Image (cartoon, rainbow, N blue to C red; front, side, top):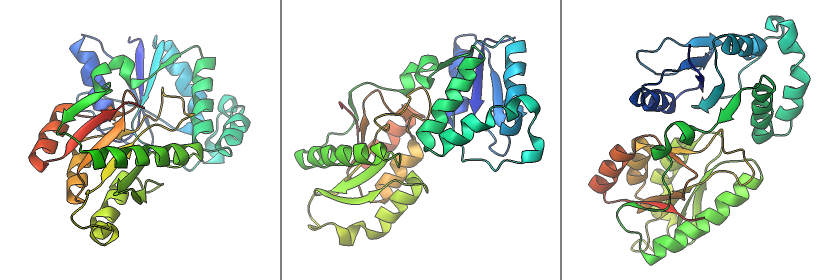
Length: 274
């Protein structure tokens, strides 16, 4: 039996959290949403569907779970009305109403349902605080123009978040080159890599900053933005000067590898005070 369950999606975060628990001699239960496999070696997951969510919650409680953390990326799954069990069916009006209000509302309602089963829902930083660094420079040093671009990008991301859109933006020389929307960070940085040279007013000026932050009103126990070594490499390919993010508000999937990649590419990494 284990007191902790990780509700896992795609990406590297579930494996990092499993490893963090193992370092403390703790085990966990990994619950994997059908269609969104978690890449965690050595752990056999429980696979579940949203249509049978109540059965999952009952199962976790029976296994002695008291604490739950959500980790990894998922997209809205397609639901099959014929698969709903009677108890989960009673939750559908709550979920549909929340989904109609946007992603943040849907996630808050999911948290509320888990709490109705008396689970404590915690953020990833509770299990692995080193993955969510406080303010400071991890690599390189931003120049004054970079700092101005980061400040402008932070304003833009706050505006995006208020509309329940993306969590990132790229700004160069005061101009917004791209914002993060449904296709995600990789698509945004690929766009910048293709178009930034002609979008920057001064080819010899500041190269630009990728900034990431949580949405202003989101519940920070779930859906914190993440950065990893692949993000650093993509930012370098886009010709940017560095990456900045809101201190204590972004998960770094592999901080050591990110620093190594940033130093190799000559990029700065900056956890910026809000």
